[in-house]
Image 1 (cartoon, rainbow, N blue to C red):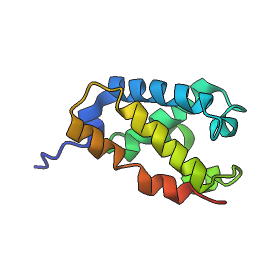
Image 2: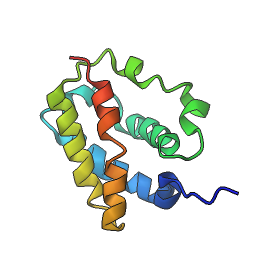
Image 3: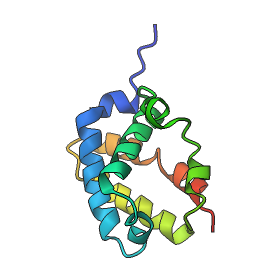
Length: 124
């Protein structure tokens, strides 16, 4: 029997939604990456990210069930994503994670899920 608890299971839906609320408030206010997002409804972006992160962090396949295969790099290709944008995205994610009332070592483990993914999205 597998007793490994995933990051998703430890975080839970409520904290994941809190994280995304804090994150996208920062994203939409960012002069660096805000313009990449301001053409799409904030609630839709948050829902897609909630579904994606649920399965990315080890939970049920909500994104696939609702939106199809993630194909994240392909979906991000129409948007110019630079190293500066990646760094800003990661900075805002780290700030947002730090707003959560969770253990410090879990904050670090959660953040460490993102740098490789963010780097994969760079296309300019």
